[in-house]
Image 1 (spheres, rainbow, N blue to C red):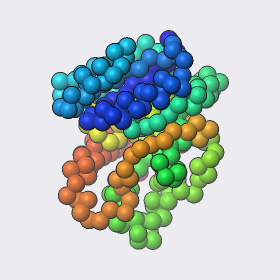
Image 2: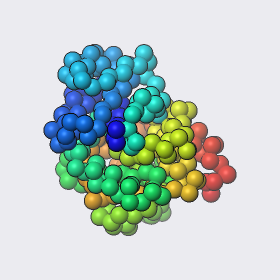
Image 3: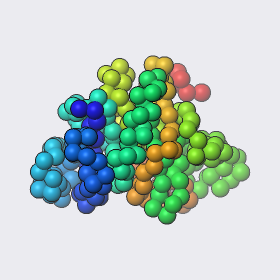
Image 4: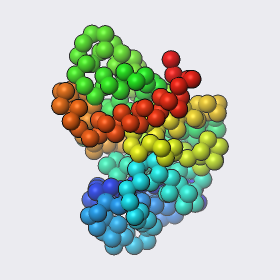
Length: 263
């Protein structure tokens, strides 16, 4: 089999079902397999998705393992030569995936490729970025970005001065949609499970670069990301948000792990 699509679900069964339906309607039977991992949603998600798609493998975890560990389970069960990591809140049609597959086949030095992500209102998401410094993550989640110096840092980190319609090498890609040859996971390892949420994608891309492979942003393929914008424009009330501290925890692990590589 050529392609395995891994969808990690947590309390988003309707989105996951919508995601699957788009894939099935736009692709032919046998083009790919879909594996859904439910991270102990506690809302009957696994049973709902199994009943909706009895021919699809649904794996129900007994607890919420987080993004990396949850996706790793799917990767280990995958039969495909290529693995598509796909968030349930993403709408992507199979022909868009085919474009990325063709690119990977023509450029074997590419370890990860991702499409252009577009919000439902048509805005292009900043899904390709430079490797962060700790302050970049703090700035992005608070109002600090409004100050001139920090605004300049955000422009650099989020690559706002780069043409979003150009195929290009990037440091890392947001993990909502990542297409990876399975041999790459065998070479660099799976997602680092020390991160519960956030920075797993950054870490994986860094390991890919460390092994001499490229990470490519590929806007010729497009996907709609039905995702709330959680970062810029937040007031200091963000400090009361649980996700903020989860992000800080992951950042601490990331910067300690890569302390000799981050300036």
